[in-house]
Length: 494
Image (cartoon, rainbow, N blue to C red; front, side, top):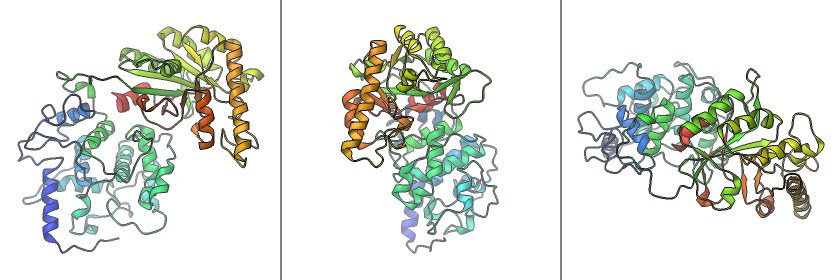
């Protein structure tokens, strides 16, 4: 839908001037470099990302030596950054009197990165072309769904490209760029928040899921994406580093010192099966080589593994902390993962579906295996329910309440979880302190019972856990044969 031209020329002039001063300065400015920003010092969370972008000439500071990490980013500015970092081969031609950023936004438009950004969307479902990039099929540059330059209010981007960019629109642009770069498909997280907030976020739901799954963007500390919030310059630098794969190790670390405070950040990796090399792996499967690579990389980069009992006791985290978790209790956790844990001296928690051990179910751990693993001192047992994970009463999924009354539900849940904990203690001599929510699904009726029985619990929502906010329902990342420790640590932790 084409927007009507505004009559207020003064407002347009002011926006034009603001765009020139913010984020990416024109070459005429004596811009600060990545190592001398007055407001992004070595202790700033975005320091390494800003350093990398400054080093590569992707983002510059302003004439006064500052960077403005909390100031908003615009679609215009993100376009310049993406073309510089990811598509340097795109033709960039300038004309006398032309706004310096115009060639970059023209290139971004040719690539189809700016379709619908900042424009009113007709009611109803997004067009097929709008969904195509997030589904793994990027549109061609001639896609009819792309908004051409003539559709902008002034024949360029007008105010739309120079207005603060929302996080959901940034996800849309980033996912399109990633697919054009050949990143391919990843297991896309279904992100319900997107469809609950607004239509504009609903149309970005797949792109948000792609960005979360592939590690391009991350949720806030409350576990939500907050797509209607504005993307800041610091967040833009982080996004570009992840999208372009910039090497953070090359940043100037001569003045870098970790913040002088207690570490509360914990990287948690979630494993399920560890298959033999050569076996086809699904989205939730690692193999021996990928798991070995994870352990080797963590060890080489100074990460220390921790156990749920250490979190429950309030023990201080090491400077780089990681917790390895195994869900379901597959037999290969013993036959393939456990020997590698012993080789690297790495600790892990294994949370089986406890009924499988009592039944000696094929393909799953038995009590002898779990006892041997626990006796090593490297493995702690946790609970993934006794039976509810697989069946539930009346076919409920995991611990979902179904049609039960609250009294019936709490009775059924408590009996199952208490049985799982008592059987683990009887067989291993260890009282489990960790619970992995089946399918990552929580329930407000369940949380009180889970918290009473297990001081540490985890879900499948992604994000770095901050244990200063508690050790219950903490977030973790799915580690598989394609995306493992290095992928998540470089993009989320370091």
